[in-house]
Length: 229
Image (cartoon, rainbow, N blue to C red; front, side):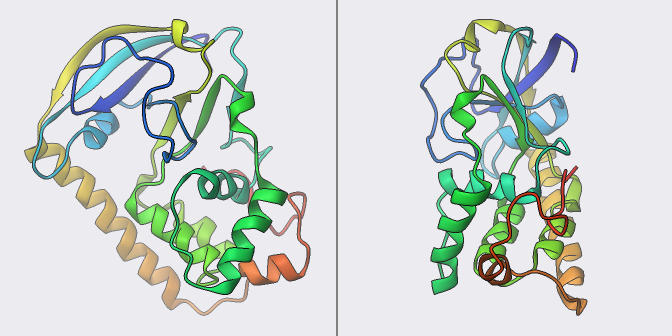
């Protein structure tokens, strides 16, 4: 990664001064300022079916920032899921899901609050559903890894620490029209869901979360897929 990068924040409003401590604690990686390096993707994230939005553009100086890249080969897909489970609200439908949540946090969790900047994938609606199916013992970890590659899953960059916020500088904004970008967003989601159904139709052996718990499988097990990009 270059020291100075350009990032975009999709929003229903212009955000010229990102502020530490604002936002939702139930986002993918907890409280933080969520961006992407893709302007078009930020526009998709900015709109709803009823409302236009904005893609806010920034320059970000990453020098001296402590960066956690969950998409690197140092981490497995279950590291990403464990962080997601800690902050997002999941539907716990089975007894095994309650055990799964605790097991994943204990054995695959990463302390994202120890870093200034987080790089990882964004759990759009479809991808959140896949993660939920996994912790409810509905799909294998191999199917989960395959599903996470569907629909061109977007990578996000999240400012986490108070130290990181002075490093970002507003460079302007562009309008995001719902007529165009909501259609693109929905098409991405629909494409992922169609491919996901194809994955489910294939009968394959693999590790379910219950197998992972019973086997005491840890992060260094070669059967756990790494680097979901």
